[in-house]
Length: 113
Length: 112
Image 1: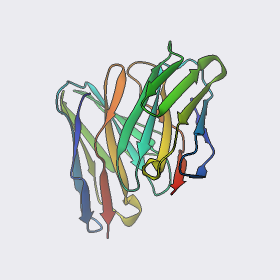
Image 2: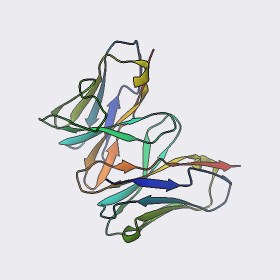
Image 3: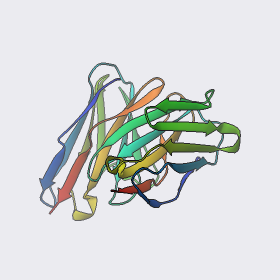
C-alpha cells in the first residue's frame, strides 16, 4: 500500500515555543491531507483538512492561528503548533488518501513542558 | 453529521476464544469503512477496508462484515492470541475525498 511518512515521531518542547510536524506522501500525490489529534485513551479527532495550494479548513473549536497548516506541494503538509502550552501535549497524526484507502503517518507525540 | 459508536469499550477474553467487535454509524450513506489496530503509544495499522458495495472482507483470522442499510459493521477475530491485545478502531468515510470519522475504539485484552 501507499506510504505516508510523518516526522518527528516524538518531540519535547518548552512552553511558548513552536513545533513543526511534517507529513509526506512518499509514493503518491495527495492534494488533500488530514490532521488528527488524539488525547490519552480517546479516539482520533479531526483537526483540519489540508489542501494543496489553498487554505486549510479547520474543524470547529480548533484555533487556526495556533495550529498553522501549510500544504505547499502535492507530497508535503506541515502542522506548526505555535506558542505551545502543556495542554497541547497530545498525539498528532496525519492521513492522506490514495483512493479508495486512507493511509496514516506514524504519528507524533508532542510533550510540552 | 456522521457519528461512529463502538461496543464494547473494553473486552477481556482468554486466549483461543473467538470474539466479535461491533461498530455502528448514524449515516448509512458511506463510501467505505476501515478497521484499524492501535497499540499503546503507537500509530494506526490498517486491518481491513470494506467498500460500500461489499458485504465482507477477510484477512487471516480477521473477518469484517458490513451491513450498510442498518449502519453496522462487525470485526470477527478467530482463535484470539495475546498478540491481538490492542485497541481496535472503526472508521467510516462518506465520500472519496473526505476524512475518516472514528469511533472511540474497543480495548481488547487477550489473556494467556
